[in-house]
Length: 119
Image (cartoon, rainbow, N blue to C red):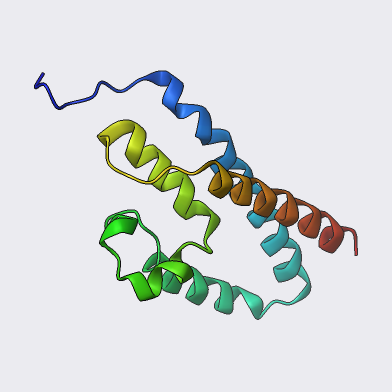
């Protein structure tokens, strides 16, 4: 192992529950809406394809143009991916306030999904 390589530590997987929660809560909300509005399925599939270009999975946030970073940072998944990149590769962005934003979005999506599902 080279001097610059960092070993993968299991403790760095603590952010996985946040990713799982966001996925489940978004799935709950979208399922409730598509059950009521059948044509929403087409819009959701198009929106997912469109937003995949804005994620920082392949190109890190630091490599994105500055004028578009604010838009990319509105996606709560961006901070989870950047924190994983920092913990595994040693390069990335970490911010406690950004993870707070992710937590807020997770709870908002949960409650919105519950309210929509009840109606």
